[in-house]
Image 1 (cartoon, rainbow, N blue to C red):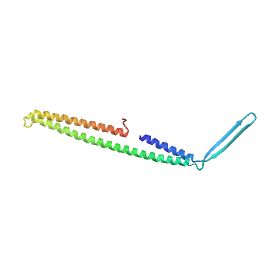
Image 2 (image 1 turned 135 degrees about the vertical axis):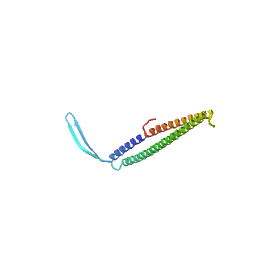
Image 3 (image 1 turned 90 degrees about the vertical axis):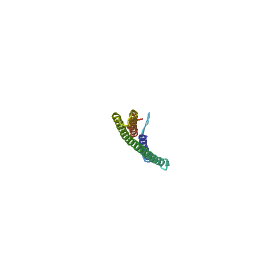
Image 4 (image 1 turned 135 degrees about the horizontal axis):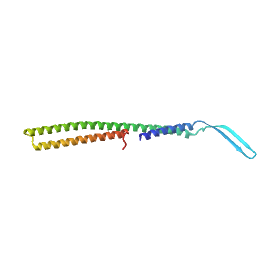
Length: 170
């Protein structure tokens, strides 16, 4: 859409140039020749012309100028939309990276809890049963799954950012 809007601005610039050119004086060189059985005639000359009082010429210039302003406005809006989208995607990526870091710390903490529970169980301390170890292992698997989900979300956010920037197509 952005490239299309840029192209339209260029087309409108050319239309304005043509409209302005149509208001100028026209200078043409004309020549004619007639060859017949007993008569030959050659004529040449310069022809200068200008249309006076035709408001369509001025209207075309004003219309072209208005089209340029409208298209430049559209281009500015698209630029702002793209800038906002990229800012949002960057925010999503940064947020996702923070979630991955948090999930990594949670996984490490859960793994440490499992190791402590296993050590307590080996030593025969109170509060460490086989059920506790199983529960801690399940918590570790859940934490690892959450970390994996966070990493996938970050990769999806990066893909969306690349799409917004124009690196990746849909």
